[in-house]
Image (cartoon, rainbow, N blue to C red; front, side):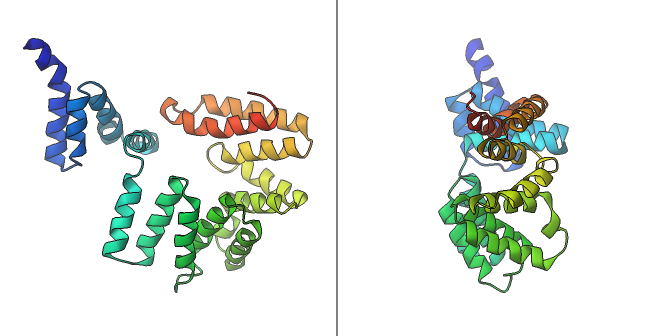
Length: 247
């Protein structure tokens, strides 16, 4: 009896928190199935961000929630769109589909957003451009980015926009333009994506020495990222390493 109490006490305490705060009931089933593992995930995904606050804690919590139920945001977004078919809700669906790597789905929703009265909205133009890039529809992506640039403002000159331009230029074989855009983005876009893509670009264009220096910098930055978020960042480091023929 004492063993059972000790085993399920974390689940009981976390279950009480779930009920009192009105969170998703699937947690209760997880607590029953995994009386130690599920409470540990709950602490990481829900309680730690509440206790600590801040961007890092929220990022850790989001990563844990995504690991447990990766399609949650997508389902919720679809439900909201069905209930209220607004451009804002369609944007949420597009963003959630992109987060799952469903780029054809995301592109279709962004395209519908772009046909509305919000066709010149920077978020829509950027979202659509990124989906087109993932589908390797380089010329269409560049057209969206040029629309964004023509609007002016902060979004037109943002590092993330420069990274998108670099990818489009590279896809179209405009290597000189791509290099300028990659160089600008690599030192300014948070995370390792811009740097990883730039290293891979340099490796492809036979600038091996520069690429190896860039890879060493990625390694250094990777070690500074919080361990729960490191796996996502490692994807870009690994992509750069493969471009150089390394593991």
